[in-house]
Length: 232
Image 1 (cartoon, helix red, strand yellow):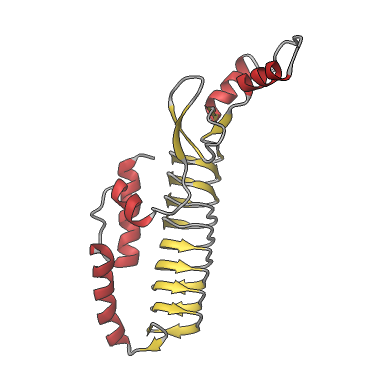
Image 2 (image 1 turned 90 degrees about the horizontal axis):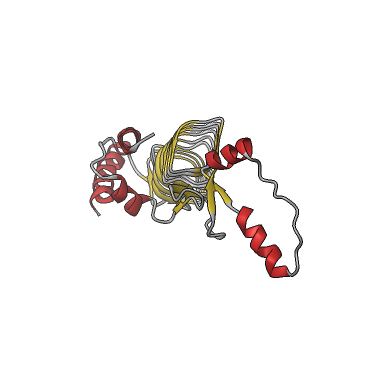
């Protein structure tokens, strides 16, 4: 996974959600769409000084999963027994081995700048994702495909800023909802198709701000909203 591949994935998501291609850089996408998503932070491996990515940065001392496994195979992590005269000596010894493992990627392929990834493919700068493909700037998502700046969601596809939701597709800014598709700005809803700015409703089509519209009226307004999202 590299920046070019990540942008290709973002472009496909934009096409599906907005029916428009992406013209933003990855840095701009991060700033505009993933600004509040919990993502891995850039740190340095304390043993090699190489750049790596960590989900937790509290310890201040790190080692990549690859380098941790390499040391385990070559010399192991056990230390020879020595006399300990005081608590500070014990803590000093502990600090030589107490390194936070970074870039923990398991049974996955094509993953970059990520930590705690399980059984995934094509993942960029994401954390705690599992059984998913094509994830960009995501946190705690599973069983999903083509997500951008999403968090704590499952079985979703082609979504941007989908949080705490399930079974959503082709949508933008969906919060705490289930079975939402082709929609924008939805919160606490169920079974919506082509709705915008709706909250606390279920089984509706072509609603805007919880008001019913004709389909042709809806699509005209949707064009304006998409232009506003991409230009604001």
